[in-house]
Image (cartoon, rainbow, N blue to C red; front, side, top):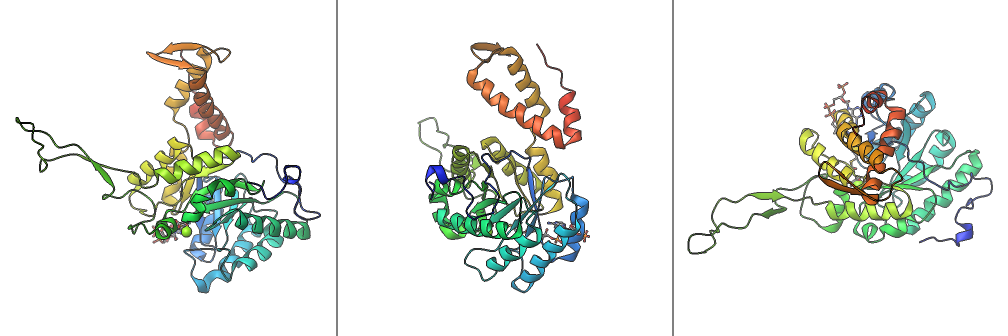
Length: 361
Ligand SMILES: CC(=O)SCCNC(=O)CCNC(=O)[C@H](O)C(C)(C)COP(=O)(O)OP(=O)(O)OC[C@H]1O[C@@H](n2cnc3c(N)ncnc32)[C@H](O)[C@@H]1OP(=O)(O)O
Ligand SMILES: CC(=O)C(=O)O
Ligand SMILES: [Mg+2]
Protein backbone atom coordinates (compact mmCIF):
# COMPACT_ATOMS: atom_id res chain seq x y z
CA UNK A 1 0.00 0.00 0.00
CA UNK A 2 1.46 3.31 -0.93
CA UNK A 3 1.17 6.40 1.25
CA UNK A 4 1.30 8.46 -1.94
CA UNK A 5 -0.99 8.67 -4.93
CA UNK A 6 0.25 6.54 -7.84
CA UNK A 7 1.39 9.60 -9.80
CA UNK A 8 3.61 10.67 -6.88
CA UNK A 9 4.97 7.26 -5.96
CA UNK A 10 8.28 7.83 -7.80
CA UNK A 11 8.61 11.51 -6.95
CA UNK A 12 11.61 12.34 -4.66
CA UNK A 13 10.55 13.07 -1.07
CA UNK A 14 12.86 16.09 -0.77
CA UNK A 15 13.83 18.78 -3.23
CA UNK A 16 17.22 17.82 -4.64
CA UNK A 17 17.07 14.15 -3.59
CA UNK A 18 17.90 11.59 -6.31
CA UNK A 19 14.98 10.15 -8.29
CA UNK A 20 13.75 6.83 -6.87
CA UNK A 21 14.54 3.73 -8.94
CA UNK A 22 11.70 2.31 -11.08
CA UNK A 23 13.07 -1.20 -10.68
CA UNK A 24 15.27 -2.72 -7.98
CA UNK A 25 18.37 -4.18 -9.67
CA UNK A 26 18.83 -7.95 -9.26
CA UNK A 27 22.41 -7.69 -7.96
CA UNK A 28 23.81 -10.98 -6.68
CA UNK A 29 23.57 -11.02 -2.89
CA UNK A 30 23.94 -14.66 -1.91
CA UNK A 31 25.61 -13.83 1.40
CA UNK A 32 25.12 -10.66 3.42
CA UNK A 33 28.17 -10.92 5.64
CA UNK A 34 27.86 -9.21 9.04
CA UNK A 35 30.82 -7.59 10.76
CA UNK A 36 31.16 -5.45 13.86
CA UNK A 37 32.96 -2.25 12.82
CA UNK A 38 33.94 -1.58 16.45
CA UNK A 39 35.82 -4.90 16.63
CA UNK A 40 39.26 -4.08 15.26
CA UNK A 41 40.19 -7.69 14.55
CA UNK A 42 37.00 -8.29 12.61
CA UNK A 43 37.13 -4.96 10.79
CA UNK A 44 40.72 -5.63 9.71
CA UNK A 45 39.47 -8.70 7.84
CA UNK A 46 36.94 -6.73 5.77
CA UNK A 47 39.22 -5.46 2.94
CA UNK A 48 40.44 -9.03 2.36
CA UNK A 49 36.87 -10.26 1.99
CA UNK A 50 36.06 -7.98 -0.94
CA UNK A 51 35.31 -10.03 -4.04
CA UNK A 52 34.77 -13.21 -2.00
CA UNK A 53 31.33 -12.17 -0.73
CA UNK A 54 28.49 -10.37 -2.48
CA UNK A 55 27.55 -8.04 0.41
CA UNK A 56 29.54 -6.74 3.39
CA UNK A 57 27.31 -5.32 6.13
CA UNK A 58 28.58 -3.09 8.93
CA UNK A 59 26.29 -3.96 11.82
CA UNK A 60 25.34 -1.23 14.29
CA UNK A 61 22.35 -2.91 16.00
CA UNK A 62 22.01 -6.06 18.12
CA UNK A 63 25.30 -7.87 18.84
CA UNK A 64 27.02 -4.48 19.27
CA UNK A 65 27.35 -3.57 22.94
CA UNK A 66 25.70 -0.30 24.00
CA UNK A 67 29.11 1.06 24.99
CA UNK A 68 30.43 0.37 21.48
CA UNK A 69 27.59 1.94 19.45
CA UNK A 70 29.49 5.13 18.67
CA UNK A 71 32.73 3.27 17.96
CA UNK A 72 30.85 0.95 15.54
CA UNK A 73 29.31 3.89 13.68
CA UNK A 74 32.64 5.70 13.47
CA UNK A 75 34.43 2.50 12.53
CA UNK A 76 32.04 1.94 9.66
CA UNK A 77 32.62 5.49 8.39
CA UNK A 78 36.38 4.95 8.52
CA UNK A 79 36.25 1.59 6.74
CA UNK A 80 33.87 2.84 4.05
CA UNK A 81 35.91 5.96 3.35
CA UNK A 82 39.22 4.14 3.14
CA UNK A 83 38.13 1.07 1.16
CA UNK A 84 37.37 0.44 -2.51
CA UNK A 85 34.63 -2.20 -2.40
CA UNK A 86 34.91 -3.13 -6.08
CA UNK A 87 32.15 -5.59 -6.98
CA UNK A 88 31.07 -6.11 -3.35
CA UNK A 89 28.07 -4.16 -2.06
CA UNK A 90 28.28 -2.22 1.20
CA UNK A 91 25.24 -2.35 3.47
CA UNK A 92 24.65 -1.36 7.06
CA UNK A 93 22.12 -2.37 9.73
CA UNK A 94 21.11 0.72 11.70
CA UNK A 95 19.74 0.66 15.22
CA UNK A 96 16.02 0.23 15.83
CA UNK A 97 13.78 3.23 15.18
CA UNK A 98 12.86 3.51 18.88
CA UNK A 99 16.49 3.40 20.05
CA UNK A 100 18.58 6.36 21.22
CA UNK A 101 21.15 5.74 18.47
CA UNK A 102 19.28 5.59 15.18
CA UNK A 103 18.99 9.29 14.45
CA UNK A 104 22.75 9.74 14.84
CA UNK A 105 23.30 6.60 12.74
CA UNK A 106 21.44 8.10 9.80
CA UNK A 107 22.57 11.70 10.14
CA UNK A 108 26.21 10.57 10.41
CA UNK A 109 26.29 7.83 7.78
CA UNK A 110 24.47 9.51 4.90
CA UNK A 111 26.65 12.64 4.66
CA UNK A 112 29.86 10.72 5.39
CA UNK A 113 29.46 7.57 3.29
CA UNK A 114 26.03 7.84 1.59
CA UNK A 115 27.72 7.60 -1.82
CA UNK A 116 29.16 4.20 -0.86
CA UNK A 117 26.19 2.67 0.96
CA UNK A 118 24.00 0.56 -1.30
CA UNK A 119 21.38 -0.54 1.21
CA UNK A 120 20.33 0.34 4.76
CA UNK A 121 18.81 -2.52 6.71
CA UNK A 122 16.13 -1.37 9.15
CA UNK A 123 15.42 -3.75 12.05
CA UNK A 124 12.12 -4.49 13.80
CA UNK A 125 9.96 -2.91 11.11
CA UNK A 126 6.32 -3.02 12.23
CA UNK A 127 4.44 -1.45 9.35
CA UNK A 128 4.55 0.98 6.43
CA UNK A 129 4.87 3.93 8.83
CA UNK A 130 8.41 2.85 9.77
CA UNK A 131 9.48 2.75 6.13
CA UNK A 132 7.82 6.13 5.44
CA UNK A 133 9.82 7.70 8.27
CA UNK A 134 13.17 6.38 7.01
CA UNK A 135 12.21 7.15 3.39
CA UNK A 136 11.61 10.86 4.04
CA UNK A 137 14.62 11.25 6.31
CA UNK A 138 16.91 9.59 3.76
CA UNK A 139 15.60 11.88 1.01
CA UNK A 140 16.31 14.96 3.16
CA UNK A 141 19.79 13.74 4.04
CA UNK A 142 20.59 12.70 0.45
CA UNK A 143 19.48 16.11 -0.84
CA UNK A 144 21.60 17.93 1.74
CA UNK A 145 24.66 15.76 1.04
CA UNK A 146 24.25 15.82 -2.76
CA UNK A 147 23.99 12.02 -3.03
CA UNK A 148 23.45 11.06 -6.67
CA UNK A 149 21.61 7.72 -6.38
CA UNK A 150 19.01 6.66 -3.84
CA UNK A 151 20.10 4.50 -0.92
CA UNK A 152 17.80 1.48 -0.77
CA UNK A 153 15.97 0.12 2.29
CA UNK A 154 15.88 -3.48 3.45
CA UNK A 155 13.48 -4.41 6.28
CA UNK A 156 13.98 -7.18 8.81
CA UNK A 157 10.77 -9.07 9.50
CA UNK A 158 11.11 -9.83 13.18
CA UNK A 159 7.89 -8.87 14.94
CA UNK A 160 4.47 -10.49 14.75
CA UNK A 161 3.01 -7.17 13.61
CA UNK A 162 5.66 -6.85 10.93
CA UNK A 163 4.74 -10.28 9.58
CA UNK A 164 1.04 -9.36 9.61
CA UNK A 165 1.89 -6.14 7.69
CA UNK A 166 4.42 -7.65 5.30
CA UNK A 167 2.55 -6.59 2.14
CA UNK A 168 2.31 -2.92 3.09
CA UNK A 169 5.95 -2.90 4.21
CA UNK A 170 7.12 -4.20 0.82
CA UNK A 171 5.03 -1.61 -1.05
CA UNK A 172 5.73 1.35 1.24
CA UNK A 173 8.45 2.98 -0.88
CA UNK A 174 10.27 2.59 -4.18
CA UNK A 175 13.40 2.33 -2.02
CA UNK A 176 12.33 -1.08 -0.71
CA UNK A 177 15.02 -3.55 -1.83
CA UNK A 178 14.03 -6.62 0.15
CA UNK A 179 13.24 -8.40 3.38
CA UNK A 180 15.17 -10.67 5.71
CA UNK A 181 13.80 -13.02 8.32
CA UNK A 182 14.75 -12.17 11.91
CA UNK A 183 14.09 -15.51 13.59
CA UNK A 184 15.51 -14.60 17.01
CA UNK A 185 13.51 -11.44 17.67
CA UNK A 186 10.49 -12.88 15.88
CA UNK A 187 10.52 -15.97 18.11
CA UNK A 188 10.65 -13.73 21.20
CA UNK A 189 7.91 -11.41 19.94
CA UNK A 190 5.64 -14.35 19.08
CA UNK A 191 6.42 -15.95 22.45
CA UNK A 192 7.65 -19.09 20.72
CA UNK A 193 9.23 -21.43 23.27
CA UNK A 194 12.63 -21.67 21.61
CA UNK A 195 16.08 -20.36 22.50
CA UNK A 196 17.82 -20.55 19.11
CA UNK A 197 18.84 -18.15 16.34
CA UNK A 198 17.20 -19.68 13.26
CA UNK A 199 17.08 -23.29 12.20
CA UNK A 200 14.79 -26.16 13.13
CA UNK A 201 13.91 -27.67 16.48
CA UNK A 202 13.87 -31.34 17.51
CA UNK A 203 10.58 -30.83 19.33
CA UNK A 204 8.83 -29.46 16.27
CA UNK A 205 8.19 -32.69 14.43
CA UNK A 206 5.82 -35.05 12.72
CA UNK A 207 5.88 -38.72 13.78
CA UNK A 208 5.27 -41.66 11.51
CA UNK A 209 1.95 -43.50 12.13
CA UNK A 210 2.20 -46.46 14.53
CA UNK A 211 2.44 -49.90 12.94
CA UNK A 212 -0.50 -52.27 13.57
CA UNK A 213 -0.35 -55.75 15.09
CA UNK A 214 -2.07 -58.82 13.58
CA UNK A 215 -5.39 -57.78 15.18
CA UNK A 216 -5.18 -54.28 13.72
CA UNK A 217 -4.28 -52.58 17.02
CA UNK A 218 -1.92 -49.60 16.84
CA UNK A 219 1.52 -50.22 18.41
CA UNK A 220 1.89 -46.79 19.99
CA UNK A 221 5.15 -47.74 21.72
CA UNK A 222 6.84 -49.15 18.59
CA UNK A 223 9.93 -47.46 17.16
CA UNK A 224 8.73 -44.83 14.68
CA UNK A 225 10.52 -42.35 12.47
CA UNK A 226 10.19 -38.68 13.31
CA UNK A 227 10.68 -35.90 10.83
CA UNK A 228 11.88 -32.58 12.16
CA UNK A 229 9.89 -29.73 10.61
CA UNK A 230 10.92 -26.24 9.57
CA UNK A 231 9.78 -23.63 12.11
CA UNK A 232 10.24 -20.86 9.53
CA UNK A 233 8.43 -22.27 6.54
CA UNK A 234 5.28 -20.19 6.99
CA UNK A 235 7.08 -16.88 7.45
CA UNK A 236 9.56 -17.43 4.61
CA UNK A 237 6.76 -18.40 2.23
CA UNK A 238 4.79 -15.30 3.23
CA UNK A 239 7.85 -13.10 2.70
CA UNK A 240 8.54 -14.63 -0.70
CA UNK A 241 5.00 -13.93 -1.91
CA UNK A 242 5.05 -10.34 -0.62
CA UNK A 243 8.46 -9.66 -2.19
CA UNK A 244 7.53 -11.20 -5.55
CA UNK A 245 4.32 -9.16 -5.59
CA UNK A 246 6.31 -5.95 -5.15
CA UNK A 247 9.37 -6.79 -7.29
CA UNK A 248 11.80 -6.88 -4.38
CA UNK A 249 14.02 -9.64 -2.89
CA UNK A 250 13.55 -12.07 0.01
CA UNK A 251 16.42 -13.41 2.14
CA UNK A 252 16.72 -15.97 4.90
CA UNK A 253 18.55 -14.51 7.91
CA UNK A 254 21.00 -15.66 10.56
CA UNK A 255 21.82 -19.26 11.42
CA UNK A 256 23.28 -19.01 14.91
CA UNK A 257 24.74 -22.52 15.29
CA UNK A 258 28.00 -21.59 13.61
CA UNK A 259 29.54 -25.03 14.26
CA UNK A 260 26.69 -26.94 12.56
CA UNK A 261 27.60 -26.25 8.97
CA UNK A 262 25.43 -29.14 7.76
CA UNK A 263 22.14 -27.93 9.26
CA UNK A 264 23.05 -24.39 8.20
CA UNK A 265 23.35 -25.54 4.61
CA UNK A 266 19.98 -27.35 4.84
CA UNK A 267 18.23 -24.26 6.21
CA UNK A 268 19.78 -22.04 3.54
CA UNK A 269 18.75 -24.54 0.84
CA UNK A 270 15.13 -24.59 2.03
CA UNK A 271 15.09 -20.81 1.65
CA UNK A 272 16.74 -20.97 -1.80
CA UNK A 273 14.22 -23.53 -3.04
CA UNK A 274 11.30 -21.46 -1.72
CA UNK A 275 12.46 -18.37 -3.63
CA UNK A 276 14.96 -16.49 -1.46
CA UNK A 277 17.93 -14.91 -3.28
CA UNK A 278 20.36 -15.00 -0.36
CA UNK A 279 20.95 -15.23 3.35
CA UNK A 280 23.11 -13.85 6.14
CA UNK A 281 26.59 -14.93 7.10
CA UNK A 282 27.65 -14.31 10.70
CA UNK A 283 31.03 -16.04 10.54
CA UNK A 284 33.52 -16.28 7.65
CA UNK A 285 32.82 -20.01 7.29
CA UNK A 286 29.16 -19.36 6.42
CA UNK A 287 30.08 -17.35 3.29
CA UNK A 288 31.12 -20.39 1.25
CA UNK A 289 27.96 -22.24 2.33
CA UNK A 290 25.74 -19.38 1.20
CA UNK A 291 27.61 -18.91 -2.09
CA UNK A 292 27.27 -22.61 -2.85
CA UNK A 293 23.60 -22.90 -1.90
CA UNK A 294 22.37 -19.73 -3.59
CA UNK A 295 24.12 -20.50 -6.91
CA UNK A 296 22.15 -22.95 -9.08
CA UNK A 297 23.95 -26.27 -9.46
CA UNK A 298 25.59 -27.26 -12.74
CA UNK A 299 23.06 -30.13 -12.96
CA UNK A 300 20.12 -27.74 -12.62
CA UNK A 301 21.52 -25.39 -15.25
CA UNK A 302 22.25 -28.28 -17.63
CA UNK A 303 18.65 -29.46 -17.29
CA UNK A 304 17.23 -25.94 -17.55
CA UNK A 305 19.17 -25.20 -20.73
CA UNK A 306 18.00 -28.50 -22.21
CA UNK A 307 14.37 -27.55 -21.56
CA UNK A 308 14.90 -24.06 -23.01
CA UNK A 309 16.42 -25.56 -26.17
CA UNK A 310 13.68 -28.19 -26.51
CA UNK A 311 10.82 -25.73 -25.99
CA UNK A 312 11.62 -23.65 -29.09
CA UNK A 313 9.24 -20.68 -29.10
CA UNK A 314 8.30 -21.44 -25.49
CA UNK A 315 4.85 -22.92 -26.12
CA UNK A 316 3.54 -26.47 -26.23
CA UNK A 317 4.63 -29.60 -24.39
CA UNK A 318 7.63 -31.92 -24.79
CA UNK A 319 8.91 -35.04 -23.02
CA UNK A 320 12.42 -34.99 -21.52
CA UNK A 321 13.65 -38.06 -19.61
CA UNK A 322 10.08 -39.25 -19.15
CA UNK A 323 8.83 -35.95 -17.76
CA UNK A 324 6.45 -33.44 -19.29
CA UNK A 325 7.83 -29.92 -19.83
CA UNK A 326 5.66 -27.03 -20.97
CA UNK A 327 5.33 -23.25 -20.91
CA UNK A 328 5.21 -23.20 -17.09
CA UNK A 329 8.16 -25.49 -16.41
CA UNK A 330 10.09 -23.49 -19.03
CA UNK A 331 9.48 -20.35 -16.95
CA UNK A 332 10.99 -22.08 -13.90
CA UNK A 333 14.00 -23.08 -15.99
CA UNK A 334 14.41 -19.48 -17.16
CA UNK A 335 14.54 -18.28 -13.52
CA UNK A 336 17.56 -20.56 -13.01
CA UNK A 337 19.23 -19.73 -16.33
CA UNK A 338 18.87 -15.96 -15.77
CA UNK A 339 20.24 -16.26 -12.22
CA UNK A 340 23.21 -18.25 -13.52
CA UNK A 341 23.92 -15.55 -16.11
CA UNK A 342 23.92 -12.83 -13.42
CA UNK A 343 26.18 -14.85 -11.14
CA UNK A 344 28.57 -15.70 -13.98
CA UNK A 345 29.14 -11.96 -14.49
CA UNK A 346 30.66 -11.63 -11.00
CA UNK A 347 31.95 -15.12 -10.20
CA UNK A 348 34.63 -16.37 -12.65
CA UNK A 349 34.72 -19.88 -11.14
CA UNK A 350 30.97 -20.33 -11.58
CA UNK A 351 31.20 -18.91 -15.10
CA UNK A 352 33.76 -21.58 -15.96
CA UNK A 353 31.48 -24.31 -14.61
CA UNK A 354 28.37 -23.02 -16.39
CA UNK A 355 30.29 -22.42 -19.66
CA UNK A 356 31.53 -26.03 -19.62
CA UNK A 357 27.98 -27.42 -19.74
CA UNK A 358 27.14 -29.07 -23.03
CA UNK A 359 23.46 -28.86 -23.86
CA UNK A 360 22.09 -32.35 -24.55
CA UNK A 361 19.63 -32.79 -27.36
C1 LIG B 1 20.09 -12.24 15.69
C2 LIG B 1 20.98 -11.29 14.95
O1 LIG B 1 20.77 -10.11 14.96
S1 LIG B 1 22.24 -12.00 14.01
C3 LIG B 1 23.25 -10.63 13.55
C4 LIG B 1 24.08 -10.08 14.67
N1 LIG B 1 25.19 -10.92 15.02
C5 LIG B 1 26.37 -10.79 14.41
O2 LIG B 1 26.55 -9.93 13.57
C6 LIG B 1 27.44 -11.74 14.84
C7 LIG B 1 28.66 -11.63 13.95
N2 LIG B 1 29.65 -12.64 14.29
C8 LIG B 1 30.37 -12.60 15.44
O3 LIG B 1 30.24 -11.71 16.25
C9 LIG B 1 31.36 -13.72 15.65
O4 LIG B 1 31.55 -14.45 14.48
C10 LIG B 1 30.97 -14.71 16.75
C11 LIG B 1 30.81 -14.00 18.11
C12 LIG B 1 29.70 -15.43 16.39
C13 LIG B 1 32.09 -15.76 16.85
O5 LIG B 1 33.30 -15.07 17.00
P1 LIG B 1 34.65 -15.82 17.42
O6 LIG B 1 34.40 -16.61 18.67
O7 LIG B 1 35.76 -14.82 17.44
O8 LIG B 1 34.82 -16.82 16.22
P2 LIG B 1 36.13 -17.56 15.75
O9 LIG B 1 37.10 -17.69 16.91
O10 LIG B 1 35.74 -18.82 15.06
O11 LIG B 1 36.72 -16.54 14.69
C14 LIG B 1 37.76 -16.90 13.82
C15 LIG B 1 38.34 -15.66 13.19
O12 LIG B 1 37.33 -15.07 12.35
C16 LIG B 1 37.09 -13.72 12.74
N3 LIG B 1 35.66 -13.47 12.60
C17 LIG B 1 34.63 -14.02 13.30
N4 LIG B 1 33.46 -13.55 12.86
C18 LIG B 1 33.74 -12.69 11.85
C19 LIG B 1 32.93 -11.90 11.03
N5 LIG B 1 31.59 -11.89 11.15
N6 LIG B 1 33.54 -11.15 10.07
C20 LIG B 1 34.88 -11.13 9.95
N7 LIG B 1 35.71 -11.87 10.74
C21 LIG B 1 35.14 -12.64 11.69
C22 LIG B 1 37.52 -13.62 14.19
O13 LIG B 1 37.89 -12.30 14.52
C23 LIG B 1 38.71 -14.59 14.21
O14 LIG B 1 39.84 -13.92 13.71
P3 LIG B 1 41.35 -14.43 14.08
O15 LIG B 1 41.52 -15.79 13.44
O16 LIG B 1 42.24 -13.40 13.46
O17 LIG B 1 41.43 -14.50 15.57
C1 LIG C 1 18.07 -11.37 12.41
C2 LIG C 1 17.63 -10.79 13.64
O1 LIG C 1 17.84 -9.63 13.90
C3 LIG C 1 16.93 -11.65 14.55
O2 LIG C 1 16.83 -12.85 14.29
O3 LIG C 1 16.43 -11.12 15.55
MG1 LIG D 1 16.81 -9.00 15.58
